[in-house]
Length: 162
Image 1 (cartoon, helix red, strand yellow):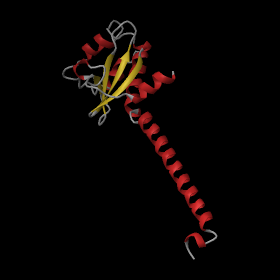
Image 2 (tube, rainbow, N blue to C red):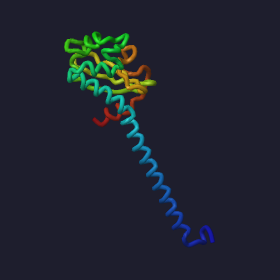
Image 3 (cartoon, helix red, strand yellow):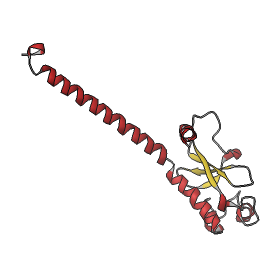
Image 4 (cartoon, one colour):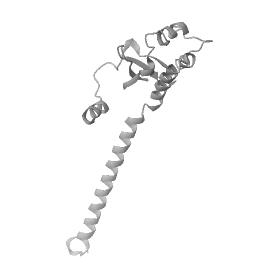
């Protein structure tokens, strides 16, 4: 027997339809949760580098902070020697108030992430973290954000719900 002559036909179809709806709802829920987790934590390592850098500056541990740029006193960076680093980030430097710095936003740009850092009394600026090495530096060309038009979903959602 099959079709409308089978007395269990409607029951089995209803059960099958419920099972398909349940699987679909679970699949959509898992996809949403996975997306939220991905976009929340995709730059976690790079963000930790910037937070560690700002923390070292707050502690006035400039040599360790300089190491996050991939440089040391023994092997200084060619274009950013320790003296220049201290002029920028030291007690008399332009970025001396790093203790009050906060990360405003982050943009993924090719092989790295740009973090817009806001320090009171100066213009926000970008710090670049290279994904492959976790080496810190200033964002290229003085960018505070990635160039070009981008849809910033996370910022849009935060602006709507905060």
